[in-house]
Amino acid sequence: MALRVDDASSNESAIITCLVSVLAVTYFAWNVKKSRKANAKLPPGPRGLPTFTELAGVYGPIFKLWLGKKLCVVVSSPSLVKQVVRDQDITFANRDPPIAGLVASFGGNDILFPNYGPEWRKLRKLFVGKLMSNASLDACYALRKQEVKNIIRDLYNNNKTGIGKPIDVGELSISTFVCVIQNMLWGEALELREKGISNLGAELKFKLAELVVLMGTPNISDIIPCFHGLIYKYRNKVSVVEEGGAGNNIEGRNKDFLQLLLELQENEDSASSISTIQLKALLVVCCATATNCSQVVGMDSCVEEFHLPKLKYLDAVVKETFRLHSVPYLVPRRASQSSSIGGYTVPKDTTIILNVWAIHRDPQIWDNPLEFGPEKFFNDGIASKFDYSGKNFQYLPFGSRRRMCAGIALAETMLMFVLASVLHSFDWKLPAGTKLDLPEKFGILIKKKEPLVAIPTPRLPNSELYQ
Ligand code: HEM
Image (tube, rainbow, N blue to C red; front, side, top):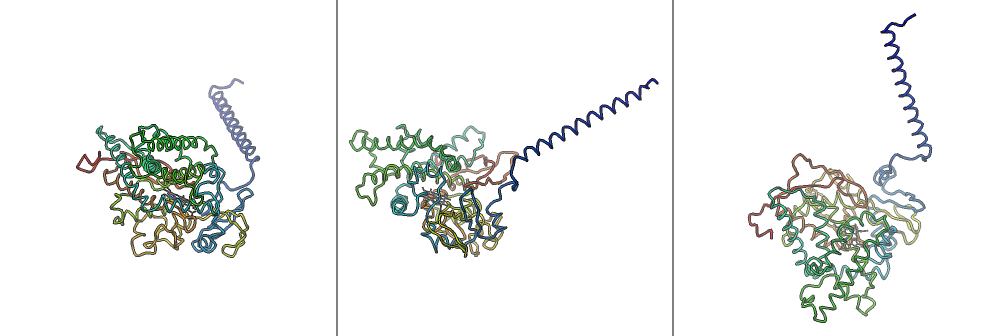
């Protein structure tokens, strides 16, 4: 019997439907097989790595964790932090540096990574007593001021074209902060700019920003030659000046840190002299921590250096920013002997992680812990008495006690000064069509996921203030 046309076409569409279905089923089955095959190779485990804070929610304020063969104990409450950093401070004063940390610090020759002992004590005394003393910081004020002025001028000139050019605020804050630190360390931007050393500084600036994050990457050799070159050139410059050949009196201005350090290197008294390796390691730690600092805070505060003590609101804004956006945990420590924390045994060589992230968000300490609110630091609440010393073990952006940050005075002053200056001189607005969102990227530091881009518009009537 002959097929009718509509029969034929309905058969044809049935065949097509059938073919499509078979293809779809085959494709689906193939995909399932492929994904099973891929999964078959994988061990069981959670979908992602839980954070220390999530684990603290399950196991409480102290729990252990095996990272490979390494036993770690994570501590997430102020009373237990106190047991670590105060009650048994010498037992837990050793560090547990990652391999890259050791490489970056020339084998732990800085202050950050070496174990507690005479060498660390010597460097720490030198760092805090000489480099970070009030006298030394005051002496460097002109350097800081000049560098901030440079930034204000550059931003202003950028704006002269008439169209407000968007600025990556994070990048601006990092480069300003690092320029200021470099200036203080070796007077680079002010006096050595024309002398060829500035290239080394520019080279360092961006590598250091990555160094902080890439502590797991041992390829620090890219950075080290900069320091070799810098010290070599600087030493030559000093000796040329000493011989009276340069006509550029390095003694005529305030000594920068590198000059102070070079003098100490030549010091014959072994209690205060330092080796070239220690000198380089100190430069690395200063630059890297400074970079880290500006990455943390960004540019959402304001002021000028001589006004700083009076700027209570700014102080609260910076403190609140540090509460929510500082280091997630302190530089890990290592138990130098068997001991106990919170009634649990902690064997010798256990790594101790102090979970600042959880403490800074603990609802038992903070009202509305997840909300940004500077008033926490100036209302009558508990936090109004918190400073950066970490004495209360509840607010720890710079750590606490024996191994706490050695650069607090400089970090605090500079941060407020840089932020204040750019906010005082410019109004900042978001580019049209963009929204302010602040999701974070979790790592060694808490950083913004997407860079904050904003447009500065000069707000001071006197254009000379921008030169
Ligand atoms: C906002 C900026 C900064 C923040 C948030 C910060 C934070 C920290 C933290 C959390 C530690 C570890 C503390 C501990 O383990 O208890 C530390 C250590 C250290 N910081 Fe900072 N820091 C900043 C800026 C600086 C600057 C500018 C310098 C120096 C120029 C500096 C020098 C050091 C040194 C030398 C150590 C090691 C101290 C030791 O182990 O004895 N920091 N910092």
